[in-house]
Length: 171
Image 1 (cartoon, helix red, strand yellow):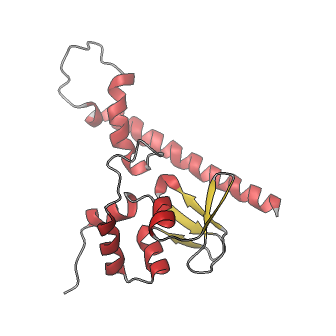
Image 2 (cartoon, helix red, strand yellow):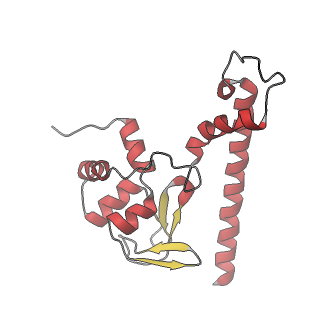
Image 3 (cartoon, rainbow, N blue to C red):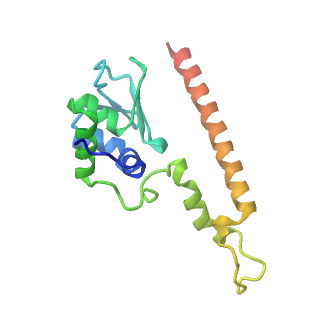
């Protein structure tokens, strides 16, 4: 019987193992660095026209237009099936305990991260008073977090458009 994975297990394998670490130290995919950017050999077309999107822990090949998460990259490079790839990634146990220390925080974690910061930057009127609701669940804070994440998405889209324009202008 094939093993079944929970959504949480798959999410952990896709998001908690840094894709750069997987490329360089686990799968030993050939890499080139230029301007502090990691370029790796695409497992599909074998070109180096690739990039890593660190906040989302994804990789992309612009040559064959293929996107990779950690599972897909392992399947393509190591020629494993889905189940074998997930089991191998789980066995690595290389996921850092706190990804926020070393790299930018993926948007999925931003709510937890912001909820830890909010009490420091927005003290209550009476600091000794006990707040009946934790700050992370306060409705106005949730709305502000949603607004900030929408702005981040908009900025990310604009940055992608700008990069495309710069790339087409340099050709």
